[in-house]
Image (cartoon, rainbow, N blue to C red; front, side, top):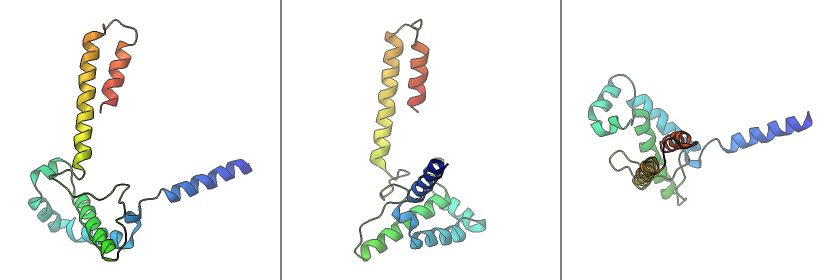
Length: 148
């Protein structure tokens, strides 16, 4: 019973540590996001946001709250730099400037190339291994699922 209680305490402590990045927990950031969402993400303000949002951003799934988080991230980074502190992480990531709808363009390109390499290898596998092989369908299914 004591061992179970100790595990529960350790698990609760780990969850508290993993609750977010330094930038996420910053009161300035949280207040900024709340105010931005209240001001811009409901009623007529939301219609205005959607009307001025580029089509590629809406197709990529960027929402008004996402935009608030992005803008407030840069407000917070500016305050950190102004005070002489290091740039904090937000949501487990370092802040990057958005290019089109990619916040991390290098990561997006690397992911695309990884998916392309997986597709090429799947095509090679399907052409060189007979479908009657014992593990053929399992390997194809795994390649299909892991490439997504």
